[in-house]
Image (cartoon, rainbow, N blue to C red; front, top):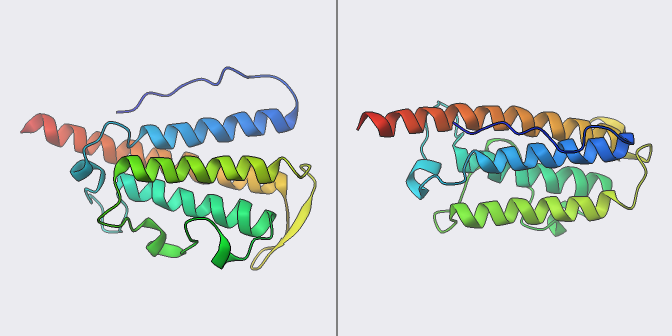
Length: 167
């Protein structure tokens, strides 16, 4: 099971706290796959296509959709690494390794930080389905999404580790 970490920054301006907590959730999501073998990371333990590595792949897509496309105005076809939606965003290519997907997610997060730095929290943009959203909403939505998926990853990892101990 992964360990939970307390952020070092616990006071300060709203934006700084949002950025710190989002980065914490990014790190926790990575921690759910770090150290797993390639086979373990791809192990499917639920009916959906969810796997530990697939959660991270999906999160990279979410970074690109929300920060590059919605906030930054980059056409989906021009977003780094693609923006597939739904269950297909969980699919990891046979040639992609855990290290590759971690690096992809880290690159997407870095690009998100650069794009977000150009806007204040109240900057409003239009999401094609939700209508007007501001950067504050995007931070909170992605933070919640990544926290939920890190929880999923923790459970999957716990199942994988217990299964390995029984062998």
